Length: 244
Image (cartoon, rainbow, N blue to C red):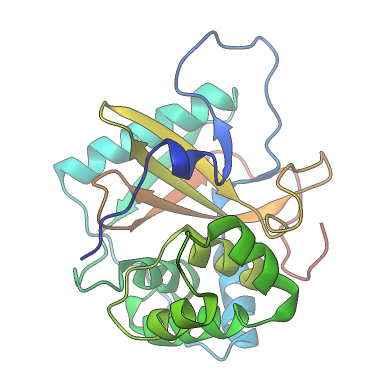
């Protein structure tokens, strides 16, 4: 399986929304996205729009290593957005078969990994849209790569998804996808935000309130899903109708 380059080059490709160190501001930061993960109503709406089967239960599969990652992400969020108490659970994504990104997205949207093939198909088809093809190629295509050939390759099951596919998925599903990844040689982590409008402009405005999907990839070669819940209800209504 191809390894994820979760390093400084990746950090520059997405909006880094949280800093792991440094003084804590006395003024709470208002996030430009829903701190908690997308809820059932949003999931059902997306599944209805994309003809996906929505499952009622999310399996809880965790272990000590994932609990450690969950605690780190929890501290990360609370450090950046003060007075927002959160709980984090990392859901294990199976099948180390190159489909982990799409399995994680399927779990986030449909509460089951079994829609991953359809999710991959939707994302790859969306990447042929002329409105996003040029910015995707400009921001993520490496020297010597051909965009059309990359799409043909990515359409095959087992091809490991990259930041390019995450950006396309955020645009397609009209949500923020936040990736908690380790980068560099040390024990440094970054929380990267791919917004629905990431391909046009990266910086959110105070009016942005995107629904959120959290991915974690601390091992460098496997995506899993994080479920973030808040103690209090969000202060804005969640929606998935293309409006911010």
